[in-house]
Length: 141
Image (cartoon, rainbow, N blue to C red):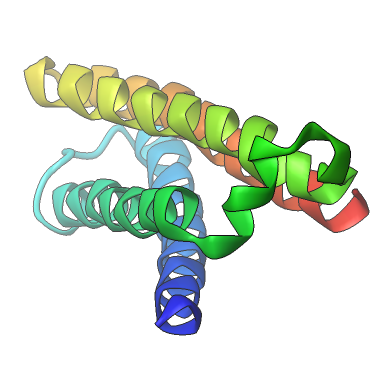
C-alpha cells in the first residue's frame, strides 16, 4: 500500500512541477502581451493548486502512517536522510503549499489581468522554487 501512495505522491509532484512551470510561462507571456487571464489560464491555475492539494494529501499519509517514520522515536537510530524527510521536507512543503494557496486566493481576488499575472508569477515561482529545492536537497542528502 505504501508503494502505491508513494507512487501517487510522485505523480502529483511531477504534475505540479509541470503545471506550475507552465503557469509561470503563461504569466511571463501574459505580462509581455498584456492578454486576459481567463479560460485555459485559469484552468491551469486551478489544476496546479489541485495537484498540490493531492500531493499534500498523499505526503501527509506517508508522513503519519509510514512504518519507516517510527524510527524517529528513538534518536539513536535517526539517520541524516531519514531526518531530512521527517523534518526539513515536510516543513518546506508546508510552506510551498501555503505560498501557492495564498497566491491562488490573491489571484482570485484581483480584477485586472496584469495584477493576476504578477501575483501568479511571484507566488508560484516561490512555491515551485521550494519544491525544486526540496527535490535537490533530497537527491544530495
